[in-house]
Image 1 (spheres, one colour):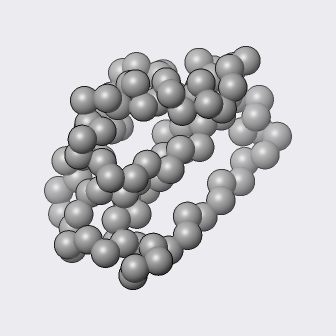
Image 2 (cartoon, rainbow, N blue to C red):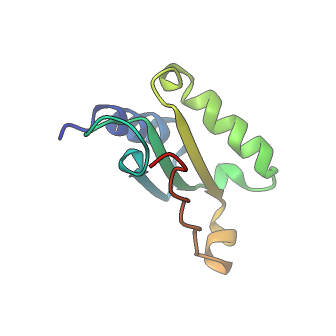
Image 3 (tube, rainbow, N blue to C red):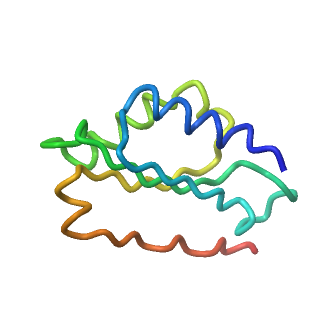
Length: 101
């Protein structure tokens, strides 16, 4: 399976947010979508860009950064941390299954 959208997300975030950690999970298979869809993603981003800004500001920054792709993404689960935060609490919550699946 080609990962067209996933690779675009990786490139855009790497180019704009200088992450030390970037983990992208295509969770589309958990939803009522055609096979090999790229519509639902969970991203974990660790970057010092997030130092001293609120969670809401982090999410806005990521949405603004991915603006050109947002018409191709149905759902985006975001976990954004600075380096200190991820060292203190490295766990990320699993996404729930789709109610329609």
